[in-house]
Length: 190
Image (tube, rainbow, N blue to C red; front, top):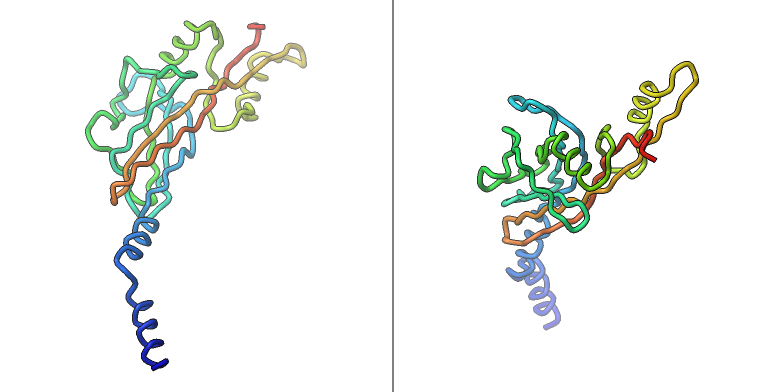
């Protein structure tokens, strides 16, 4: 009798319930999209560089209906000019498994104008994901303002928020809020 019970348990564990299989498949193929970079990029056909955000889907399942928005505080930033390379408005954008995709969101000049309208009268020198201004941008400012050991420069990082959402193949909704930084030339702006 014990042998029959053990056999029944062994068969049950060899063929788990459908719900368990579904949960395993959902977890295995759940898209995991991350913001991996931000920079200024001039896309083919565009007259100027755009703030471009790079996303990577680090999973086995596609991320469907991908959307992304940027915010200055609680205010959504809406670009008046769209890059020819921006695919967000072309229908259902999807990130394939292990795919990295760059999306141009707003021209650097338009973002500069928006920041200037809010009293942040500083030139944009770059973008990134860290609060500390990277050495490459500090070096550019040093070369611009410091001559023969004389002069000074000032730079700071201004945060913007990024909100992106997508669906998994099993219909799961995913939404993430993270941030990026605009690196500003604050020299002479007190």
